[in-house]
Image (cartoon, rainbow, N blue to C red):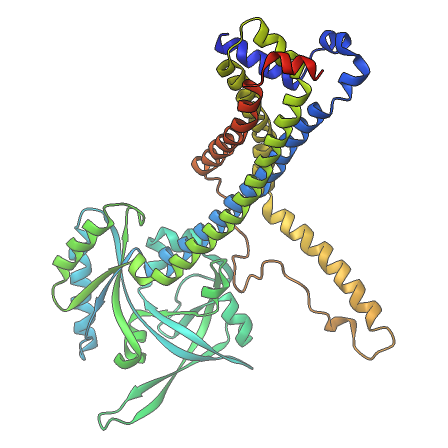
Length: 456
């Protein structure tokens, strides 16, 4: 038999034609348990692929969204860190600007940004919160495309009005009950010449409230003008750096650019790329993603076993056909390949059904999560109300349930479909369908024709 004949025969086994069904007994054929099993196996494969695609796309998009914000807005692609800041602030800034201009000329570098960053206590109207004070150049907000694209201005403007103005994260503004025009007090520490540590306070006017969509970062950031930050932040509680933006943070040439920056900076500076600066966070993201995919893969593996079970039932039902094919000259290898192709087509049907549905669910994941969140909160609120009937607890004391708390995750996941990984899932599913088909196919292929005819 040719390959095309084997493929047609495999399809015929899965979906017998009406004339064939009529000859065999139409009522029995239409209610064929083997046909139902093959269709059920196809549906099981589809249902297992859907959550796998959703988990893959959603987790990949979530990790990419978080990583982009950390790399582009927080650590830059790499940092040229000054080991010891000079006591003469204007001279130190001028030296840093000269070094930044030198690094700008290196191939692969798109921009450099001087910054002094340190921790402080931010005091608002009512509450206090820890904050990461970032003293930056005003041009950072205009020249760096990442700040323009990934920052959403909630109130005010993404710019400094004067040397005592500040731009703060939306989550920090909410914690400290601050709005545009309010006074923000920053408290940090400094060490006196005699070795005594004393608090140092400075007041800033909030001129802008921004959000990156990642509250873990928005809850920390306070941006102040570069010169003001140099005066306010002491050397023992801050570090001075030049943030370097390259053409691609994930490029293989990043290490080459890093070595060039180190050569240009000299011995007084250390150059670190974003992977070195965020190693633990990045490894945690990847480990979480791999564990989720492994769990989903086990579901696909279980679903593929249904393909094997369906083929076993199919071989039992098609004993007469198998015996006749052998009698007219079909070889065991050809029959084995026929049933393997049947398993392949079953897996292919599951993929054709599952992948489009999975991608549709993944693309609409934000809307689906919000929908389920509303349903869960309606049911929970109803249960809370019934449980506290006759008590003095107000209905407003109910705390809404958040399936993906924006305090730890992105408020809106930017969905990006990784087509290469989706194709890999389809390929693995097909391979599994073929592998689990080998045993029932071999059993059917090497059954003796006479024994098959006697069992009919």
